[in-house]
Image (tube, rainbow, N blue to C red; front, top):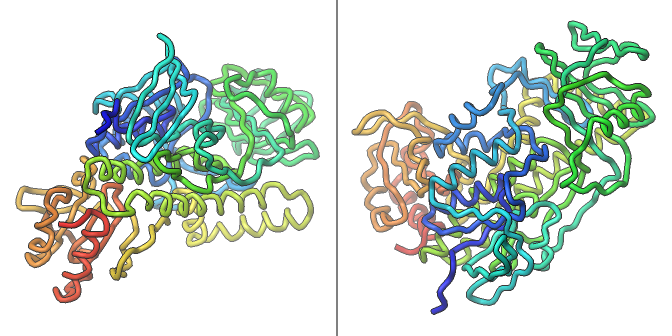
Amino acid sequence: MRVMDTDVIIVGAGPTGLMLAGELRLAGVRPVVLERHPQLWDVPKASGIGGRILDLLRYRGLLERFEGASADPYPPLRLPFGGMHLDFTRMAEAPMKVLPMSQMEIERLLGARADELGAEVRRGHRVDVVRQDEDSVSAEVTGPDGAYTVTARYLVACDGGRSRIREMAGIAFSGTTYPEVVRLAQVAVGDGVTVYENGDLEVPGFGRVAAGFTRTDGGQLAFATTPDGQLHLSTTEDETTEYDDDVPMTMDELQASIRRVLGAEIPMRDAKRLSRFTFKDRQAEQYRAGRILVAGDAAHLFPATGVALNAGMLDTVNLAWKLGAEINGWAPAGLLDTYHEERHAAGARTRMQARAQVALRRGQDAASEALRTLFQELTTDEPALRRVGDLIAGNCTRYPQSGSAQHPLTGTFVPDLALNTENGATSIAELMRTARPVLLILTDRPDLSEIADAWRDPVEIHTATTADRPADALLIRPDAHIAWAAAVDEPIESAAGTLREALSVWFGES
């Protein structure tokens, strides 16, 4: 039998790759992360995390670390959407929450977590060639001390939208690149600029500019001010230039863009963030090619801000436990293929709402303006606003139900129920810390516990009570999605068969 250097090679130490490394360690797998940059990349990219991934981080016991690293946790949210704003500030419980922080800080926290769990991260190691056969995959690498080869059972490409690994694996990346460039900045308001109470700016030599979105023949300007004098600003212009992601944007480049869009410069200083990107609408046609898989931007690019990083991190939570099951020998047939089935569909749904933003954003005629006005009016109604917020957050993801179990909760993300056990109070979040499958029995059902006893090796069995129980029992996957549920007071005759089926489908034969 061939000896592998490691279990899984991860190419790319961005948030997706580092999150995957930590999740694989929880699954009992040895990953090696290969990153071409010699140190943490300080070129500004993402400016925070939000949506469903925050719940998952809490379930892993990591959320407090991220909250502590954010200078402004969960600010009142008016989220850009298709050239307008969605105002969640008037909702008692918003469906979308955001933790502002730099991508460098996100990577630092996830890297520290991966290190604590024993993952190996090699910086300054460039993957030049990958090869695979029926049993293994190998990567030819150039590192600080020269060339070498590393072999593993699987390789996951987390190397971004221009993924060389995806290309070498022959995975098509179909879609559209829109001819527009977005430039983002967080700066201090410069001398001579007046900030009005409603957030408008009085710009020297130009006049008053309204907060929010301003459309001109040159493009779109958007900005918002904060009480401490910070200016969050962006420009969007039709442009076909291909910029090198490794070359940071400068203040001069930003001012030139503002001048083209607005016809004047806005005095500003002390930049905390300067970045640019193009809007791309692309998705890998397959998330798996043999022993090579893709995740994050290597799997999907969305033509809207605020969703890509969160979707990529959620990819890894779905993938890691399935790779762990394969490598540790208890995976049922076809388990790893469900990574593509589930996350490709989730990516397509995120892509759908991002494409809707394109239709709202890019139109310049009277009909397009009418569409934006109508959409803005509709989202003043809380049900419509909540529905769109859930889409952006990824809260409405429901994985396909398998087998004959058709409970409404199956395939959904498990809510964080408060639980009472014989050992005291706990919660769903506490049970999910170790990323193991859990059968949670919420009433006196020894019949269900006896059935699951044959799966006690991969599956933890817990008995608890909760207020207003949603089901008699929940079978929860390591990614916190419900694989099976027994209806309240469901007879054993029906519950027994579907429980055995679900346990076999997801966690192998007993």
